[in-house]
Image 1: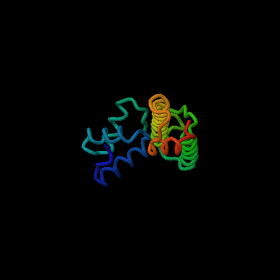
Image 2: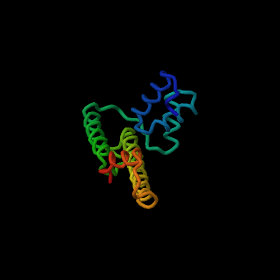
Image 3: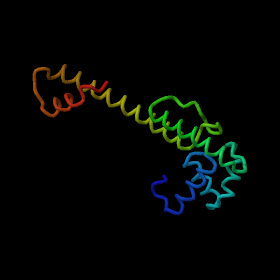
Image 4: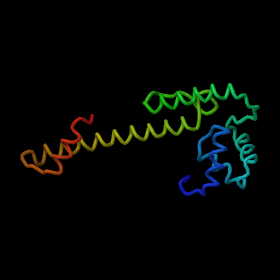
Length: 146
């Protein structure tokens, strides 16, 4: 959805995301429903019950929170479970994105392993004594995938 936004709109969406710490899609929806007016979008998000609250900026606290959020993103990228949810101190929209990407990567890896196993079983069952260079090369290339 955000791939086709004009640069100025994308900048506004990311600015809102950085301010309210919610996913890009939700920020884009909030802006789109409120004529791309940031303050109205924030008010809409408050009414939605997302936990967005007006705050004064404490830059030291903000820097410490960003460090925690960055560490959480790094841990999530390595596959460690992130138990943070929107509104928690360590949660950020980036963490939500990284967690989603890691889940997608894991799902695709599992599907790839399943497809490899089907290919191995089919070769063993239907043509155990034949050589198909493409199939054999593919299986040899991915023999360590588990």
